[in-house]
Length: 179
Ligand code: 5GP
Ligand code: MG
Image 1 (cartoon, rainbow, N blue to C red):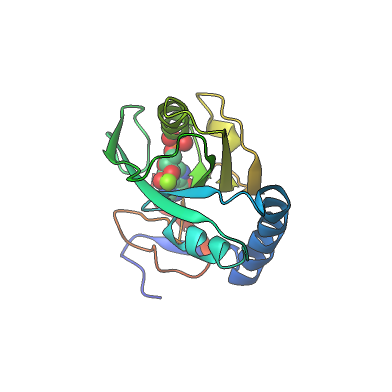
Image 2 (cartoon, rainbow, N blue to C red):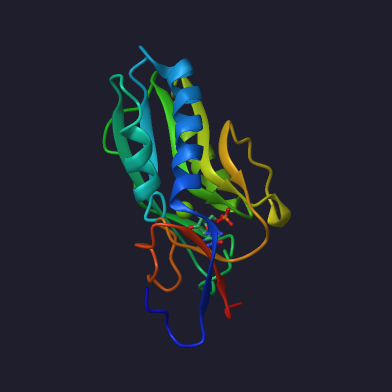
């Protein structure tokens, strides 16, 4: 793929490794949620590819919703000021809710979102993230299903962007030359 000037990409997780991780996650999620018609809530935009690959490995009835959060600050750092740009459109009261996120970094976005969703009184509320970057955590987040523990580097691809670029990379890559 053509890379913007000044940036270099190094593959951290190949598409095959991502697929294997999602298979493992889907097996565990199926054990817990089969027969419960859960609502999976994807966090846009980063989780759109992860969500679409994950749900196609879950062969039981479920519903899908999407939320969109925005934070203010520079493009590679989360500032901690989180706003909900788009919320769930169906009622989640009394339902089993599983939030699907691309990466938990400082934890500020997910702390905000989980608190917000909790107020809507779901029967259960859990979190599945493809990547966990624990080294930068500012707010503690309980992650129930996690694909990879990742190093403190800026990652792009498989839904993750830098300035809206690179979401379409099939692998998860380290973006070098930024930050
Ligand atoms: P947090 O609030 O946990 O700091 O940030 C969560 C959001 O920041 C993620 O959902 C993701 O959109 C973005 N983010 C955190 N780390 C990275 C990264 O390494 N690469 C990219 N592209 N986005 C990241
Ligand atoms: Mg995200």
